[in-house]
Amino acid sequence: MTLPKSIATVCLSGSLPDKLEAAALAGFQGVEIFENDLLTFDGSPAEVGRLCADLGLAVTIYQPFRDFEAMPEPQRRRNLDRAERKFDTMQALGTGLILVCSNTQPATLPEPERAAADLHAMAERAAARSLRVGFEALAWGRRTSLWREAWEIVRLAGHPALGLILDSFHTLARGDDLAGLEAVPAEKLFFLQLADAPRLSMDVLSWSRHFRVFPGQGELPVGAFLRDVLRAGYRGPISLEVFNDEFRAAPVRRIARDALRSLILLDDEVRDAAPAAAVPAAALPPAARLAGIEFLEFAVDHASRQALGGMLGTLGFHHAGLHRSKAVELHRQGGVNLVLNAEADSAASERFEMFGPTVCAMALRVDDPARALARAQALLSPAWQERIGEGEHRIPAIRAPDGTLVYLVRTGSDIWSDDFALGAAPAPAVPPFSGIDHVVQALAPGHLDGFVLFWRAVFGLGADPIWELPDPFGIVRSRTLSAADRSLRLPFNVSESRQTTTGRFVSAYAGAGEHHIAFATPDVAAAARPAAPMLDIPENYYDDLAARFDLGEAELSALRRRRLLYDRDAEGSFVHAYTHAFQDRFFFELVERRGGYDQYGAPNAAVRMAAQTRQRRR
Ligand SMILES: O=C(O)c1ccc(O)c(O)c1
Ligand SMILES: [Mg+2]
Image (tube, rainbow, N blue to C red; front, side, top):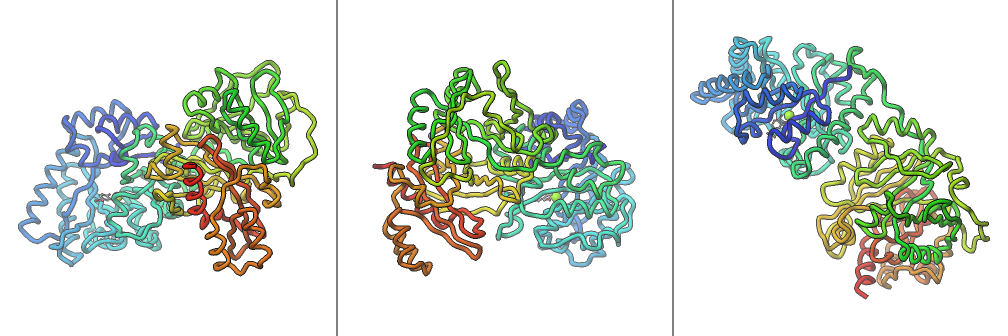
């Protein structure tokens, strides 16, 4: 047994049957029927009830019933009549619970006693039909906007068919918490809705109606909230109620799968507080201990392999080996392995046919590949198997949300000697790269939240807040996921504009993908070798640097001479440089972190994007 999982139909796109099928297919046990989805459906409530039953879905609640409590007459009497009609609907749907959200009307009377009396009257009528009523405080309710105020009214009403409904968004968005919930009898906790959200400064109604996300995708402490509810003795379903413009426009099955992934993760995070009967039979296997990127693999053809190999050569890479049975080359520079795959009829060639030269796989070093794979599968990411030759290594892999492969390589193991004919390494001509510092991926609008959840859940990465970067042709939003020890850093960029560097990448190549790869170097001035096709930076940038930081003349002229970019914070400094884009697709960055600098030089992103636009036009 795990906590029963439910989802409100409002989270999903499409017609009501589409939503129900997707919820059932993903693996939910229940659905909240949102009134609007029923009103716009051309079948009876009884048909919806049958559809749910056929799909194995319980109708956990019917909602919302608005603007009910504490209205003056004659609305009061009309509201009670309206409630009777909704009870008919509930019985046809086959649900025993209705959600009343707190009144938002200016005419709402202020006395909690009046609200309690009205809800008592409604509960009395519900009870006559063996139905129940739950009361939820909307964060923007006229007189009732906090859960404690809603509880006070439910307590005053004192009817067994009336209880409290909690919604994490309404509480957490107000900066409130659940202190005091222990005082509410467990049997009065009728239902629990969960939603997360990014921290935004806007009115709470707009925030709620457009920007909610699934737990784990936002920045609110939903796990702690759920733990408090379970400690208070709540034993009902956990139900997602997310109003999100992007989710409502996205393919319904993808969003339903993200939704369930979010609850599986949350369920696991609160195991310590869950009632014994609801503790998942098996905990999720712990997330992998990561140790960086063993290799990145590019899908290429013979011509682009030649060209990319040439460009890598200017950065000090050498051709380190050839695969024994496939058209696959290994290029190396220090601790960085890049695989160029031109094998026909492979996962790589599939990507190449669709997107041209592109990164098609990333191999992560993990402490235990089998455990990492088991966790991914438990979180709804299926395993993937590449065709292999006699005696060659089988590396476990899963698919990232965009279909690229994530290989799982045991830290410290040698995956190269068996499958590759390796040549002798030449003496390094430049200070060797210590590894891959970060890999930036461009995503199509609407995909960021899904990627954030995937990487958070499957690999336990943490997510930074969102940055907004000004491109000459629009805004790029960027969010970075990283391991706590920074052994893996993955910034994701999204742009609504098709003209930005990010937007062009996504629209021109019909998909997302890695659009820039940063190599870590101890000496960026040496690594940005004269032969390398480095991006030029305007003189104005260096004048501004001199004004912003008190750099010595020698340091400033060293930066200027090599056209390096610079950033600094309280922890340390960051010197970096970019190559031209390879065939207008992806590009490379060279980064030198000094001291404890832990960011990505975001103040320089606008300069970089403008320089890229100029370079492209040349
Ligand atoms: O935005 C709303 O009106 C609304 C309705 C019902 C809910 O349960 C809720 O949390 C919000
Ligand atoms: Mg709600």
